[in-house]
Every structure is written in structure tokens, then in C-alpha cells.
Length: 222
Image (cartoon, rainbow, N blue to C red; front, side, top):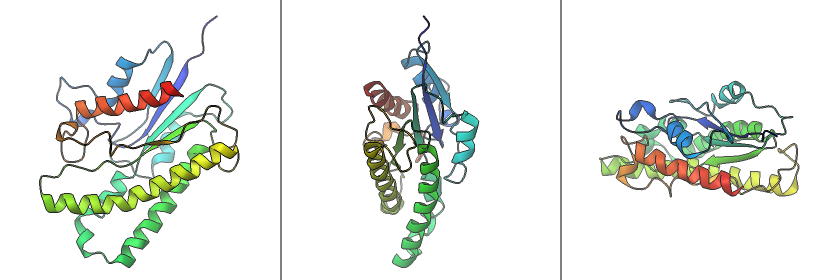
């Protein structure tokens, strides 16, 4: 009897679609996953696209062909929001608290809409925080970390909401997720050193190695 493959689907931006920023001898996130997971047991799909935002994530979902009625054990991992945040990074020092609140409110609407749509598959979903970049300019680094805290607050809130849905078996989750795990991968704790970055904001081959180790730890533990 042929054992049915499990599915791992990655959606998002250049955190997962990082091949353009690597040296020739470095592995991309996709290549790391393919080398670490037994492809006879896992069907790996990476639809992440460099430059993607919360507004474009649903097109990746549609392209991945996720079937709500599919009984195959599927894990979806999403890393999105970094490019939404980049739209504001150069003007952070000019924004009032009221404007920052409006930015947070808009991101919540955009992010929650995208993630709630993905959660309706009823499959295990992990969402990733936005790691802190590595800008050589210390002033820019401080601005980036301060600004990203607003976006990460929304991501953490969404993870908590998803977890409550998993536990209750209703709400945005259409069917109960068996053996559900808390739906967060905190990339801030994964990519912390300079070696993890190919440039100020993109993961290096080493960073991709660490990111995929964390993803695999989650999916194999589920």
C-alpha cells in the first residue's frame, strides 16, 4: 500500500523566495527543505514570491491549489508583512502616534483578512513574525525595530486568535484541526545574527538553513 504524502505549503515573500540574493554555492529555502525532508513522504510546494504583500497572498493560496475538502494532512506556513512594513520605514521619524495607530489598524485589516481566508482550509497553519533586519546604519536599525514592533503585535494577536479557533473547533476554522499546534513561528528568535542575512533584509543560505530547521521542527512535531 502506497502511503499518502503529507503536504507542506509555503506562502509569502522573499523570506522564503530568497534564491535571488544568494551566492551560487548557497541553498535557497526551497532547496534546504528538499534536502532535509523525504520527498517520498512529503509534497513540498513553495509559492512565495519576492516582494509579496498581504494584498497578494491570496493569489499564492489559489495557485497552490489548496482544497478545503482535501483530507491529506497539510501544513501551511506563511511569512508575510515585511514588505507592508517597508512602505513606511523611511518616514517613521515623521509619523505621529495617531498616524502610527492608523497604520496598525490598516495592517490588522489586511493581515487578518488574508490569514482568516487561509485558516478556512481547516489545516494546520503557522504564521511567522517579521524578523528584525540588519541595517549597517544604527539609526535606521532602531527605526526599523521600533516600526516592526507595531506589525509584529498584529501577527501575535492573529496567532492567538487562530489558537483559540483551533481549541474551540469553530470560528474561522471550518473543521477541527487534529493535534493542532500553536500557530506561530517567531523568526525574530531564529534570525538574530549577521550571518543569517544576505543583505539588510533578506535571509542568507545560512539564515534559510535556520528557518527551515524551525519549520521542520514544527511540522514533524505535529
